[in-house]
Image (cartoon, rainbow, N blue to C red):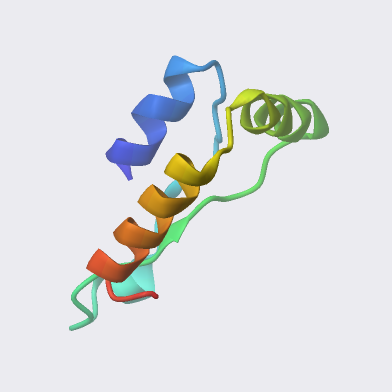
Length: 74
């Protein structure tokens, strides 16, 4: 959760309800789910603005695919 909160905060995005899902956090699952939570419209718009400002090229797409494979999602 902190590994997501800190980078978001670094670009000025605060998701007030960001937290660990209590059910999966207390289960035998190897990875708990992270609840991104709810936010107001201004925060959602700011997050979208930050995401749109990122250069999305093949390098970023390849890195995302690699990370997804490493965590067993792809």
